Image 1 (cartoon, one colour):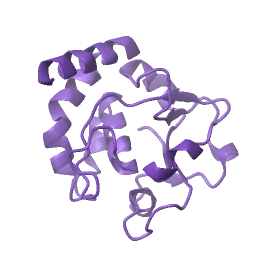
Image 2 (cartoon, rainbow, N blue to C red; image 1 turned 180 degrees about the vertical axis):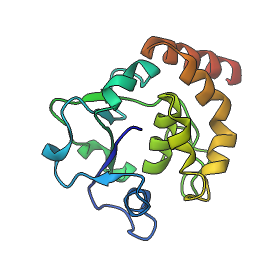
Image 3 (cartoon, rainbow, N blue to C red; image 1 turned 30 degrees about the vertical axis):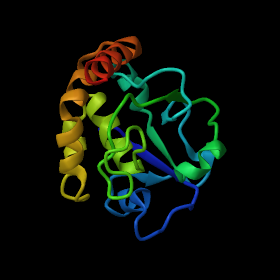
Image 4 (cartoon, rainbow, N blue to C red; image 1 turned 120 degrees about the vertical axis):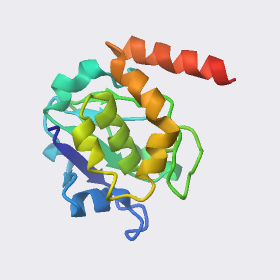
Length: 169
């Protein structure tokens, strides 16, 4: 089991906020400050230089962190000292706000994807009954997530991503 942490910048509608729902449902713990994030944890970041891969599973055991802020404020993405920043590979959003948009995942979609890539399918399955879009997310991205989870490292994930993009473009 990978401990999941949410750092919530409080920028979205609290009734629709998937980060708040993850905490409410016991799928994540809130990190109220950046210093509350465990040293060596994996932070999901759209600015990371490396893609998340199964090779990050050891670091993720210290914590998997999602920063909850709106895409319009993404330039204010906080940097966490002592953490491993990793980006998610190409995936399609299935949430009602960004359905079908590549790479514009909400916080729960990002955590769900990360758990699958890290080989924690059992933990990821706990999202299915909690978020009505989760089965659609897996329908849209399941094959890709499976391929990403079989890569040995970040370069392998990027290779899978690039092969997929070449096949559809």
